[in-house]
Image (cartoon, rainbow, N blue to C red; front, side, top):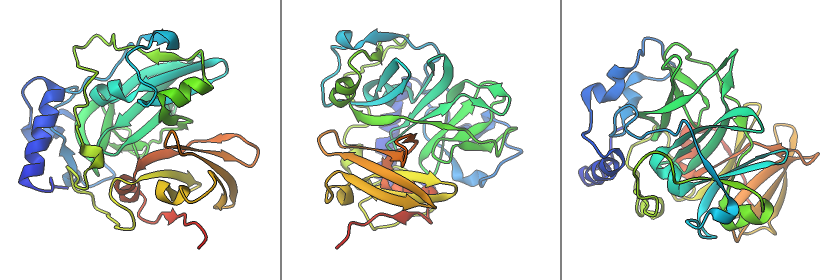
Length: 317
């Protein structure tokens, strides 16, 4: 779990320094801020990403504007979209790159919307776990190059991709994913004309017109090592990942490109329909009855790091 090279680490420090806007805190890799007596992953694999606890500030009180007011977005800009009933909300990556977590609600239900720029993973969760409702912040720590959130109530550390607490008092407690669409603003607005959009009025001074990660998504190198790596696809090839009752499967976009945009598949006994949108570079999943199934768009390396036994979809030759 070390940075790949001195040059990469230097770039990471410069990048994350711009995110933090203040001095780094490396004491104990930032782990000293948390009670890690209980943990389900090796502590030496929990590493500092650079900024300390809350150095990347989560949004606790989000404000929204109507789609017609979102002049800061271009049609090709990426967003995470949530909808329930008559309500639809879009969370631009332009903002999430700088905050990573938005504590919010949809149709009156508390949710947390998360994005890890290092893994390309946007995942929304029900903010209720067990008998409690939680709010989350950015710990400044990483596991398998992925965001570790912490809850404000117990300060347990939660792995975004594995969707559970991996250290602290709540170790082992699971989060429930909420169906989310990772797509372009143009595609989301076409589907949800009356959507609301997370406002750049976040209470923080950030340049939301710039990408603090630069060309990271198109480079082959990683900033941090992962335990499991597979060369089947390029490290940052987009894949759609699903997990059905413990069985995971990845649908690489390079494979979906070879189809007509619709894939009928079966994973662990459950019939699935994968829809691939070439123009928006987006994919989503539903079951045989047309009900949406939570899935994850991720860089291939990130999906494989957490799912080394994943099945992989291949088009018929």
